[in-house]
Length: 458
Image (cartoon, rainbow, N blue to C red; front, top):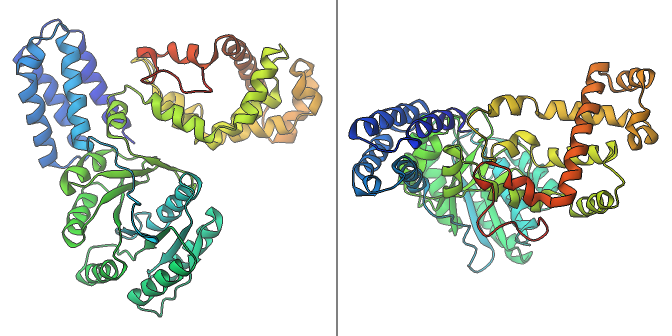
């Protein structure tokens, strides 16, 4: 999401970090680069001005001048001000109310409200053990009602039926009644959107809000919408008492300016970030961690949390025991690792959270580890016999030809996979001796989250 912005800000930070003494001149030069980077990322002009003024005021003061490492102190100021713009604190949903607690989603058409409703429901069901009901009041787009019904079934949520012939307020009344009778903890209301803001839309969404009396009113915004997203956020902020923001499509080719602008313009916290199409692709938004990612410092803590939530612990423990017994890492184990990587959004998603050195190109790494290539590798392993998976050294020329043909790939692809397996086998041997702690300690900056590794990863 922040690739271009991260690259520009990281370059500016590196240029000034090594300097033993900072002058007003080189501070201004760096701030000019930062300003250009923010403007190119579609950050709203008033937000850029405020940010630059705050950084400049602190940088030219005693905070940097008296530091033994002024370059690092300057980068620390940029980080702190980014955190300030992004919202300072992580604010979870407030569900402390008489059930059913109503959560209402508002935003323009195409922003991803319906998908976000399902993602949020799944999160509340799996992590918070809540009983959730979904209802759509989008009478202008019948397909939205059907889509929400389908998604509700996928994530295990209840669904209150609605029709394009009903009034949105009557749908809300019925949904509240059904939610109470079904002892639902959370009722998520998916509202109608329009391609553009109009008076009719705003009147309707205000009526729905008044009838539903939601405890949380979330504005769903497309992170790739640029300045249009800022305008929409301003309009919705004036019409509704928003309590938070959900950024969608953050995994797309977005410049990242929306995240920096919407929070400052609305004054409301960013609660979640959609990072994919799957119903589990919803991340809690942490301003401090996001600021670190923008500056190329990585976000190992979020990566560790994601590993704990999505990695199959039973399979991981079985593999660890197997390696400790010296049985080796075979191709079936590699397949398990690839499938778990896919479950976490692919290696590209993990690389975004790692603090990579300046001479490493994250885009090149992500390209070499995209989802399609991982799927092809799994297909190659599926084309092998159990014996070949267990003993890769059995695979000779004729076997490679058969495997490639069965997977619809080239012999070179089979060779690359076998080479990758050999490298991973060596890495797994090292990890089995020192655990994940050693691997993370080798990352720039130590790579360790505050307080060390969580239980199960030492």
